[in-house]
Length: 449
Image (tube, rainbow, N blue to C red; front, top):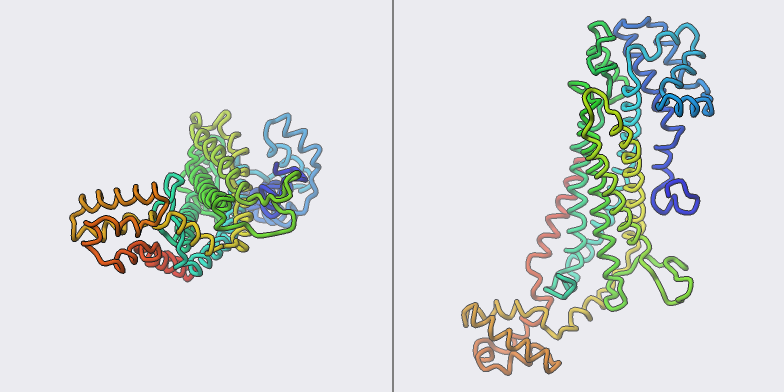
């Protein structure tokens, strides 16, 4: 899907595909090799002039991709072929390239460099989606609508409350993302078995300089077979996809013909059917749901790949090569679809009111019960209102009329008080106050950013 000319910009984005392109991966390999040479030159492990030559020349050396492909298929990894090509063109300095390192050092570090670029893109996209949700929550703070449980009308809420719940989930995702970065974005340098024995007692100094050169965190110990940092990041990205999938699922349901309370942005023939001219399908929402499901598989694979054998994995490591790019591509695609959909989301307060009124007051039966409870006691109030609800359902009339026909209720509260209790707009609880708290958190996060 990510390579398909037809689908690649449906399920992901050009910017994220560029991060995980072959060109970007090779560039990251070379960047890691150069940083290693620079670090070893600083610490006296290799001649300073050799390190300077590698840093100056290696990034611009053209690579024979066909030969590199052949070498990768033969060796199983690209680094041996890469180092051979670079060394041949670096002259005498090439003797010091990849000094004391192992293939996984370079590949892990390159993966982290790509992940860092991916996370930076995702943070920008996430901020844009959160801004749209903030706008919707603020604008519709007091727009009443039916809250639904088990797909049935339950109690009144506001659309702002719904949007603020969506936003609160992404706020927590943003916090998780920030917290995961120091643990995931670490340089990798351990040598053949993780002990840095090849660097003659200067391994820790080299690793510190290596991490500084790359702008990555320095680990306390080799993480060749301790993959929890990358796993945590992938789980966090999958959680973002899941949170966006929830938004998409809600929008799909609210777009249903029988509900019709919100709609994805109108664009000529977007979501059109090939045979039914009237159709307007929730395309972005469907992609959000699909990506959420696909990201779950990537997250599951990463968890499975945590179980590495001894000091170097025989196969679990390779599974990460599928999962890590996939979840980044999916997350970027979901955020792009969500930003498009939410920025032009059509909210129909009139339809929301019509649906609220469709039960003729039954949706606020709890409000009436609680209003009667001080006079009748909770259980008797419940029984009386329950009976009135049944009468209203059977007669097809309004709850207020059914209430007034019951002497116990009519004598307990005046008509105007009962009428007020039957108005959904009067039973929104602390929805507005909770929206305000989410908006305040958003303001604090933006100020910290």
